[in-house]
Each structure stands twice: as C-alpha cells, then as structure tokens.
Length: 128
Image 1: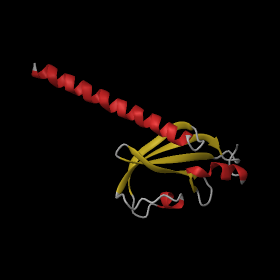
Image 2 (image 1 turned 180 degrees about the vertical axis):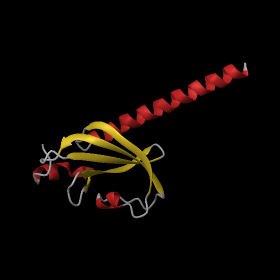
Image 3 (image 1 turned 90 degrees about the vertical axis):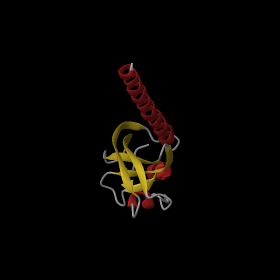
C-alpha cells in the first residue's frame, strides 16, 4: 500500500512539473508576441546573479530588487538584415515574468529592449 501511494505521488509530481513548464512556455510565447517577436526554439535556461548584469541594464530593466533571476533564452524567427540570429531572454522570479531583453548576434551594443523591434526595422538592422 505504501509503495503504491509513493508511486502515485511520484507520478502526480512529475505531471505537475510538466504542466508548469508548458504554462511557462505559453506565457513566454505570449510575452514575446506582445512585442511582435516570434519564437523559433528554446535555447537554454539558467539562474543568474543580477549584480552588474549588463544585458538587462542595456535594455533598460531594473533588476536591483532581485538578487537572482531565472533566465530562459530563445532563438527568434526574426533575422538581422545580414542573416545573423536574434535571441530573446525572458527574466523570471518564481513564476512571474519581470522583463526581458533581446540580443543581436555580432552587433554592437548587442542588447536591446524587446520594445525596440520597430526601431530596429526602421534603422535597417533587422528584416520586417
């Protein structure tokens, strides 16, 4: 009986973990879409110390209230005029999205606010 209960609990917890991951993926897709960006694929997930974290600062995001954040990086479907890739990082604390930034491969300064898509198109940096 105890073994069956343990197996049931394990299966339940695994199922809950998958649902949370799927919910996060949908939240991330909707968040990026709200700025006009589209996900091609998930690249990585990591925890990051926020002290002097330049990509967020360059994108105008204040991470001072947080010691550590969870970052999910996506390769976007949009491309630079040169054909180079565009990435987006989504910053989370627990299950809440607290911001995000973009990164253009081999472009200076490299990091940008997700709100800057129209500006990047108008400057001729990315394709429409």
